[in-house]
Length: 216
Image (cartoon, rainbow, N blue to C red):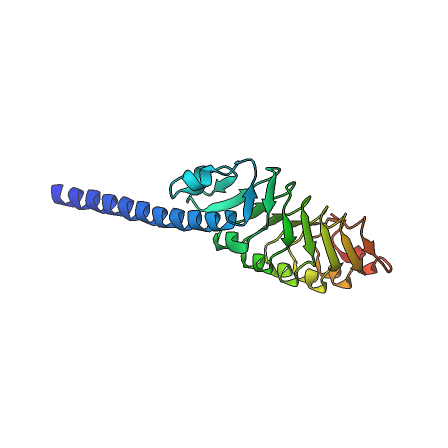
C-alpha cells in the first residue's frame, strides 16, 4: 500500500515537473516572438521597456494577456505613442486572438504575413499612418470577427477576397484613400452586422449584395 502511494506521488511530481518544463518552453518561445515583433517598433516613451528586461514568461508584460495554459492570446498596445512599423513576427504566437495597435503613429505597409495569425479574431490597426493597399492575404483569416483599418492612409481597391472572411461581423475601413467599387463578394459575409466605409474615394453603386448579409 505504501509502495503504491509512493508511486502515485512520484507520478504526480514527474507530471508537475514535465508541465512546468513545457510551460517554460512555451513562455520562452512567446517571449522571443514578442521581442522580435518589438524590434520594428520605436517605443518613444519606453512603455514596453520591461519586455526587454523581463524573463522568459511574457504573461506579466504590459499589453499581454494569456490563457490559463499561459499561452499569449492578446497583444493590446492601444495609444502608446508607438512609431515604426508592424511586424508579422507576432504570428509566431499560435493562440493569438487579439492584435490591437490602434491610436499610435505606426507607418509602412500592412504586412501580408499577418495572414499567419490563424487564430486571430480581432485585428485593430486603426488610427495610424499605414499606407499601401490592403493585402488580399489578410482575407484568409478563418476566425476573424472584427477588422478595423480606419483612419489610415490605405489606398487601392478593397480586395474581392474580402468575401472569404466568412466569420466577419464588423468591418471598419473609413477615412482612408481607398478607390474603386465595393466588391460584390460581401454577399458571402452572412455574419456581417456593421460596415463603415465612408470618407474614401469609392465609386459606383452600393452593391445590392450588402443587403444579403445578416441583418443583426
